[in-house]
Picture 1 (cartoon, helix red, strand yellow):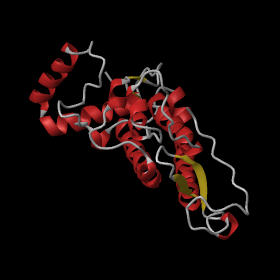
Picture 2 (picture 1 turned 135 degrees about the vertical axis):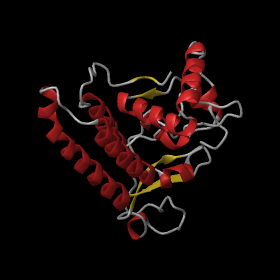
Picture 3 (picture 1 turned 180 degrees about the vertical axis):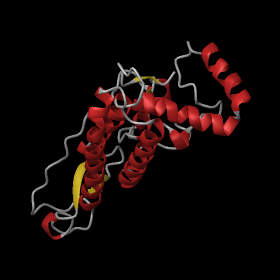
Length: 229
């Protein structure tokens, strides 16, 4: 379920709980996304979001210079694409710091890991690079074979037996941006759709991640997203 933001009258009590009028409190600095399952107002810093939105726009504009080269079969080098991806992750992580305070997501909850997380081609390359550096080439090959043998399991292959993500540092954008405000039980109940955080900054970031895969050099990127499996 996507969020559109909630409108508040200027003279209404500020949802932050200060007992001041909205116009005398958070009107110019924050906007109300929704209320979480604990009835807390999810207020987001306007300046921070707008600042980070401009950073993503700048990344997107910078990427456009590779479009013509990609049509000529040149495109963007993997190393450069990964640098872009890491910068984007930093921006998104910074943007979601406040949101996480109101989210019902918590360490050990892995309900979304059972819903086929997706990743783009450049994110797959980033995960491979991370695993190779962590495991070494020989253990990496053994690990990949193990993943292939368990490819039919309906669960993220990077979820440990204790319910923790073993690639958390390099987890894909789809995992980073999956934050919910509804009751945690809704995530496990297939009949209920969790109330997820959504914002223009996530839409633009998703487009940048996909563009990085499309523009990769010497790659037939007919797809932009695939199951992380």
